Length: 425
Length: 135
Image (cartoon, rainbow over all chains, first blue to last red; front, side, top):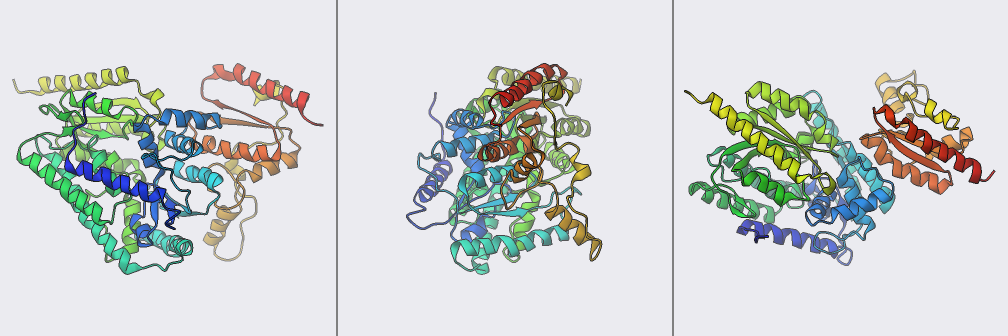
């Protein structure tokens, strides 16, 4: 295996994450309070305004997948009665908990003082925290975010979420920490979020250039790391995105393609939009199946699960609770099927993609339901071919490398064939 | 259901067609009707896998059902890939464990060829209750 190529921003992110997990491991001796919550609809700035440390179980699960620990954790959960059909993030998390709750840096994670159940379109989240409550015996505060069934955010929906923040979430955080809600502090953190979000969007939209200087799916999951987790609203987050933007700007200036773990990618031959989360257990191998073919992902839906910023939304310090509500309402998992289709169609057109490829994850109903409808609709609307592959988030039993590679190659051949038939005589 | 009965089980309670018996109390006929409906759904609806249980013991309603009907065991029959039901099961099973109530579980799909397996499993379960349960 070759040594992974890293840029300074990657090393910065690695240090940030290590520092966060180190703080978590010392949370009890430092009297830090800990809240477990979810990536979509996370209220990081609000938590940080109380000096609370967030833990995101999905991130722990995907990290376990990348560290080849998830198979063991899932097996443990299944032995405890969890079905093989359900979300593998949940089973991985339960298995990790039952194995001593050792985090990705090898240090033990603290138990939660509170489970903040931000419900944004993924029903499994509710069951997940019901399960964790049984294990940790700690309080749960639910933030119910209405689904965008009608395809838009109404004022009533925003008011409903703000009211929950005022009457449920903030009082729970005040009670837990013994501190009063400090709106001025929250506003300062939201201003930092806005700055980082500007740079993130610039980075993601750099993929509109040819060649794209980034891969907006495989590379994209690293780019969203800080802003989707514990670093939105922090100076570290701002510094990371400023540095990342500088690196991407330099690649753009030099006409370079994305940097992959194996080094600089070769010539760009295919531009794809990808829908669905990636597989984490064979992440590098999965990426290589694309990069070796010269296929670059120019836009993806997965990089919008923790916030959709490229439609113009930014956290607004002037309206702190309302902006948190609008953020939660706008996460990708909270969008209706027609909205998802419209977003992906826009990506295919604006990023001049050759087509839409769906990675359908066996155990993720939140993404997988309706994906075949999405595929056919995008093909019809754009006239560009769609592809469909299947894998799983963190269960290695459902990553069939040969089968997936065959399907990707067939899909790229289909694009090639389409180009030949459409080329002017 | 016929397969379970052929396996020796008498079904004394179930959670089928829950939509027709969702509310356990009459909706208040006075006051704001929207508020009355909201309270009915939030506070007087059946505890199911699709309802978030914010407070209280998970599985308490299932244990109550067993006690009320005199059931000797519980069969969990969930549809494949039904996340709410399947994620609920470990919590409900833990409640049954605490109450000392035997149970078994299987998944079903649209493949009708699985009935023989279900019958064997349910038959073994009912036999085990007959043979080893305390009177």
